[in-house]
Length: 134
Image (cartoon, rainbow, N blue to C red; front, side, top):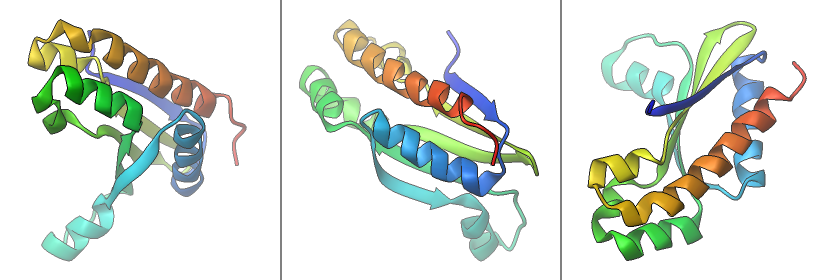
């Protein structure tokens, strides 16, 4: 099993980031955190990096269910989505596969919860794939 769900879309970075936020929301995820790696590394280390944002996303019902069966599952939350510059005409969106929670914890009770999260995140990626270029 790969640890990533990933797609490259034919969109520049900013429109792809906006579309990613929208697709996640339409599939039931809220964005709890957002880190602009390009700005952060420039400010902290004075290095140049192509645009890349890390989104910490959560569907509260799934987070609650995971914490109910595995109290330490919080270290694996929220779900991580990375939107990263590929070139002027395309952007890659990577998602840490929630099913890795089962592998990391060894708690099989997380399987249906992780499967639902993965299905919803995959649906968001499919939605992104169907968008026309901007």
